[in-house]
Image (cartoon, rainbow, N blue to C red; front, side):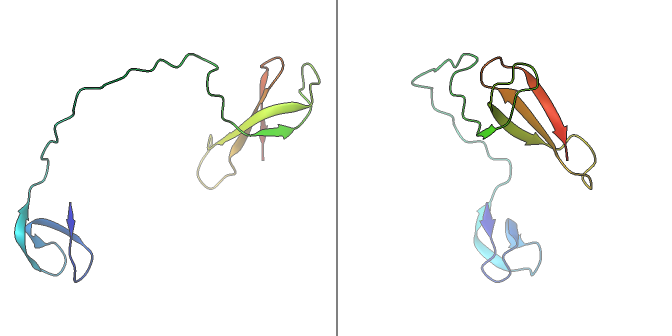
Length: 98
């Protein structure tokens, strides 16, 4: 993908779509790149590489004081996101609406 040096817009073919700048080289859309063979395959099983942040909060099930957390937009965009917790001890998951 090439961008116009005058206005910063995308160049399609040899012309800028916004200011009609003429490029010296033609940019082809949809050109495929060759993907080289994978050299190594790594299998990650469930639970490996747990990288979620932890917080101090009591698990509602076992009362353990630490849990992982993550957020997700579960309702419309103008509403607050939902915060999910997963206990580090018993793996119980619960949510909290903001």
